[in-house]
Amino acid sequence: MKRYLIPLLIVLPLTLCLHLDALLLYTLEGQELEFSLPQLRALKQESFTTSRTKNNQPLVEKWTGLNLQNWLASMNYNEYQSIRFESTDNYMIRIHRAELDSMPGYIALSREKTFLDSSEVRLIFPSQRDMYWVRGLARIYLEDFKPAPPPRQIFIWENETAKLSLL
Image 1 (cartoon, rainbow, N blue to C red):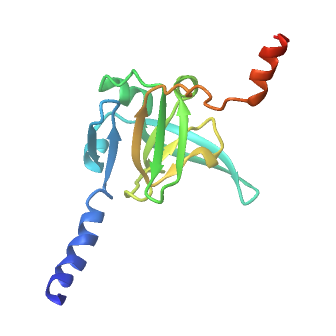
Image 2 (image 1 turned 180 degrees about the vertical axis):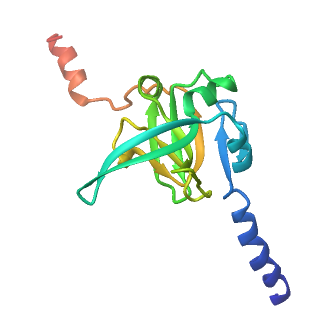
Image 3 (image 1 turned 120 degrees about the vertical axis):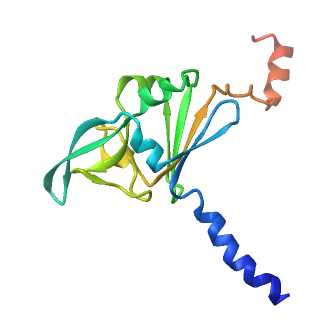
C-alpha cells in the first residue's frame, strides 16, 4: 500500500498546481477556457491609475492590464447577465451586467511597470473601493439570468378567506 501512496503524494500537488498560472473562463455553454499569463500579457493592454487610502495615507498606483469588457467582447462573450470572479483563496464577487457596463474593470497584469505573478494578478475596478477588487484572480464565470422560483408554501389562511369571501 505504501508503494501507491508515494506517487499519489507527488502527483496530487502537481495536479493542483497546474491551473495556478492560468486564468480560467467558464462560458454560458459550459466551456472551460484556459488563459496562461504569457497569453494574457501578449494581448493589448491599457494603463490605468487607482487612488485609495492605505494606512491613513493616500496611495496612487499605476497599473497595466486588460480592459475586461473589451477582452470579453473580443471573444464574442456579450450575452451574459452576471459575472462571477473567484480568487485562488476562493474570495468571490458577483457583478450584474448593468453594473459592469457602467464602470470599467481591468485584469491587472503589472503594477508600477513590474509584472505580477499569478498569485498577484488582480481584478480591479478603479471607481470602486479595493474591497471589491480580487487578488489572485483564478476563475471567471459568465452566468445567465436565473429567475427566482415561485413560492411553494401554501398558507392555511388562504382556504379560510376563500370561504368567507373576503378576497
